Image (cartoon, rainbow, N blue to C red; front, side):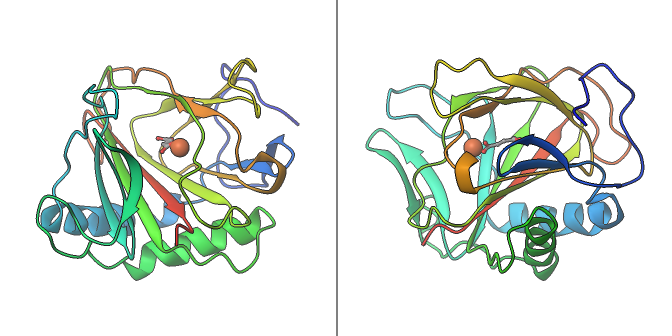
Length: 217
Ligand code: SIN
Ligand code: FE2
C-alpha cells in the first residue's frame, strides 16, 4: 500500500512501505531508540561540530553537517569526497556509536539488505527553511550496499525520484523515528528534502536531524 503525504502518519512500526524497487520507508522504526540516537549524535557533534560546507560551485549548503565512522563525507571547492579525517581539526572522525551501527544494520535487514555494516554516517542538521536539492549518493566505493537514513525531530518532506534527474519525484512525509532505506535497483535514485517547515519538536526543538548511513570505503 502506498500512503499519501496527507494521510495520518501511521503508528507504531508495522511493516515496510515500498516506494520503489529496493526502496522502503520504515515508519516509526527508530522511535524506541530515538533518545539514545539523539544523545549519541550530540556527543559526535560536540567532538566534530556541525558546519555549513561549500559546494564545488561556491555555494554554502543550507544543511549543516558532521560525520562519524571511518569515513566522513565532505565538500569544498575541489569537489565531493570521503575523508578519514575532519578537515576542520585534522583529527579522525569520531567513532560510530554502537547504537548507530546497530540501528542501521537492523533497518537494512528489515528492508531486505542483510549484513549491512556502515563505515560512514553523515549527520545532517536542518533548521526551518533548509532544504537539500535532488541528488544521487554516488561518492561511495561500494554500490551493493544500501543507504539507510534515519529522521529525528521536525518532520520533513522527502523527495524520491528515479534514476534520471528529470524523473518527477514523489513526496513522502518523514517524521521523528522514521527510517528510509534504498538500495539495489534504487541505489542511485535521485532524492532530496523540501524546505523544512517551522515547528517545535518535543525532543529537538526547531530542527530536524538526519543520520545517513553508508558503506563508503
Ligand atoms: C541526504 O540525502 O543526505 C539526506 C536526506 C535526508 O535528510 O532525509
Ligand atoms: Fe543523499
